[in-house]
Image (cartoon, rainbow, N blue to C red; front, top):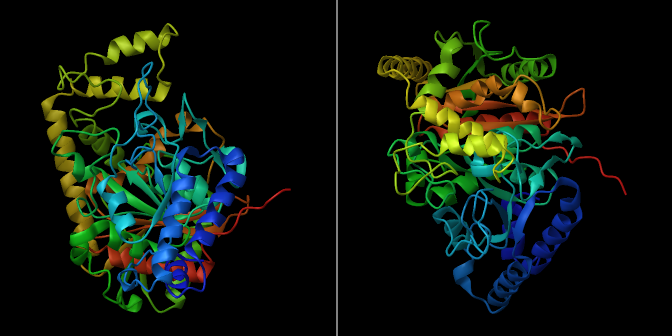
Length: 478
């Protein structure tokens, strides 16, 4: 059932909220030993929340009738604060130190106020600094379609639970594809909103750099694209009006562009046959529905990864394991942390150590190179925004290939440019699930739109979901 269907069934008393929450708690207990997604849980409290909802509805409390997510279970990335649950973003915790959230993040509070019931917090790489969800405490999260494969990162726990039908709505985050990559690998939907529309606060790691919200956002995931507008409207709060999500979109009036692969001059891999076939099917299906679909040439795209990386590595005061509150603008801890890792005395993971070293090196980037990267980013963004206008979307590959074996992203890190480009340009983008490819792994693609035109990418995403079925349940074995 979709989120709106669950809420309507609870609201009209066709289903009790306690039964809904019980079903998802039992499903999480069944799948978590396989996918290893849960870091901390509040199952007993969630069941009590559901009983309270039922009691109020039974008593005729009409104040609950308007709640859009009444009785809908949701799960949250462990780097986002849920009161009373683990809140460390996969980072090491010192002896005797507890790192639990004292209050909900604004995003979580809004979902609760809309009637949603949080169940658990889910796995992420240390400091959310990698595209696979592994840390030294929870271990590695596995893909529900094949446990030899990665679930992606950094919102990998959310992707794995949603792909396993163990959650209705998930809350993740996205600074370099962290929401969209797990959604792609695990066959579900995710949406990186227009920057600053959804609250970014109460996240671990945090960042004091004023440029942070230009690149980073918290982001909804769901099994179904059709659940994303509802979740986004709740998460956006008083800024939801900027997105005009209630405005019906005439999809046949939307201009659709597509790019099959990054240019040959790019440092990333070329798109493989499964993803290329997926793009071809989508183009054909939209044309058959009467939409204007055209290929797009975007000069400068071949250098998108370099400019995005240079610009994003200039962020200061990221509260990772390398952050020193006494010297917030310094990265002096990066090199001692690297030495401790090399001498087997570090509690941190390799990807967190490497990220710190990269941030430290980036401090020495020549000012001229930074200016050129910023100019390239601005020019590329202006070209794409001009092409999309107020009525256009772009179909774009998520990655060259579907999910791969755990650990292989070290060999394919440059392919993150397919995801990072939209963070660097500050555009909203929807990850759309499109079933399974020939290898049995989930496939899908990204649909991007202009700033504050999120409803267009979501509408085209729903059109493609209707055409190809979207999320497919993974095979089960007794």
